[in-house]
Image (cartoon, rainbow, N blue to C red):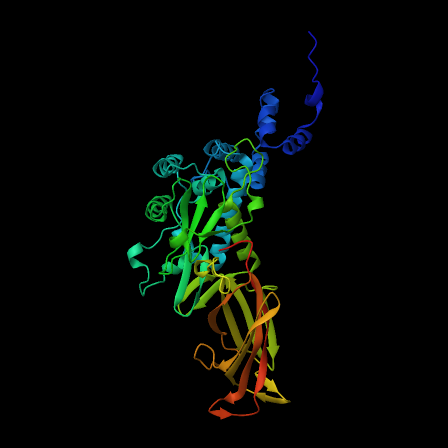
Length: 450
């Protein structure tokens, strides 16, 4: 009897089939495996599934969603698909990428925060929250919490205590000026239930739609609310408790299909907010600030165009501002928006060089500010010192940093000016005074509020 000759794809060599299957993607590769034994062997090749895991899940080893080792990459890929099978796969991949990027940045720059990140919540735990608060979470937020259930946080009784080291590990970060300190954490599900019951009910919302997802761990109350129906993320203003005034934290036009699992693209305020935050961290737009032995993520911009920099006679001055929603009052006309600003000054390693002469120190004596709103001067300020201090700058020392704040009637403004320095010391001047420029830096109501 004549031997049956191979036909169709079976006459193509194994290497060529491997290339073809690798172009199909995981789902089609699994379907090819159902054709016959030869195709099953080709579609089960370990290198093929290692490539799929690397491309779609950024996995370099075969681990499941709980971090357990799997026997093969194919088994690992199957475990991931099974664990998140109730969600759109494109959304799962996007959320995993966000958390991977956050953890990679933290490992390199701020490892103290990593132990505060909780393991992912289960479907049962998320369902419990929805039942307790009578809400339906947007799909992107559900997946975000499946990967990480917020942060471990200090108890409310310790807010405002002198030991703030743990408090400054907020993933979102914050700012300070005068005696005010803000440092924002992502809340875990159990605290979302508690804070939502305490705060939302106090505000008297008639409809179950808002949940509290992030707050400041310090004594300055800064509260972020997720609208579970529309998907927008809001932050409370100064009038939150009086009139429930809030501001959107991400552009409204970007939120889409938050409850539609059949849509090919879903994003809510939480997803967009965290995605933008990690982008700012990765690009160095915001950085970790060290003050004494305490480190925290500072929301003051570090790069152009929102951070200005100028060097005069060896004195470098960097300046930037951040919007402060919790002290802004949208009802007011003259003092509607609050901005905190950070000034960082230092002396270059070569020292102070003025009028052809070099000095190994200089000390600030005077400040001059020009504050504008919509390009119109609203304040021209002169005075001694900065926040009551006369910083002495020496070559190579750390920046002298101080923060202050200003109110504005406009969502668009700027600050510029100069500092008058004395070469040497105020008590022992070595030359004539000179003005170090503070280049213009903007006061802007941002698209993304943190």
